[in-house]
Image 1 (cartoon, helix red, strand yellow):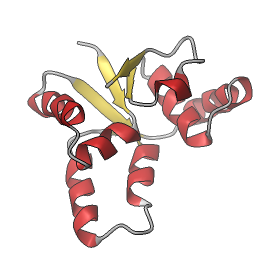
Image 2 (tube, one colour):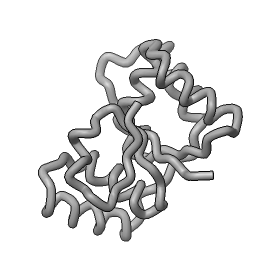
Image 3 (cartoon, helix red, strand yellow):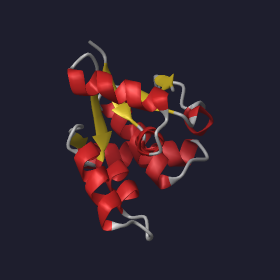
Image 4 (cartoon, helix red, strand yellow):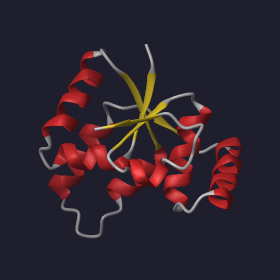
Length: 125
């Protein structure tokens, strides 16, 4: 079974009620799909300045479904190389490096942000 790394935008879509994201996460919850997230995704979701306590609880419950992968020195160095080679944000570079490091397929809605990274496997939702 292939491993997946879920990009932040997929979780945001799910929280907004987007059906494709919801179905994908149901597959994760049922064990039909193996998926993780980067700790960067946790930070992105929980750092919204207008986040209410209720929204925070929903996000934390969602995050509990997906094991998170820490940024290791190897991932940080790979992300730095990606930033030098491609025009991407630090967060996207860290997420891409995490997927590459774990030999995972990156599940994202923002394919354009990652498509220049040829070695990265991407699944669009």
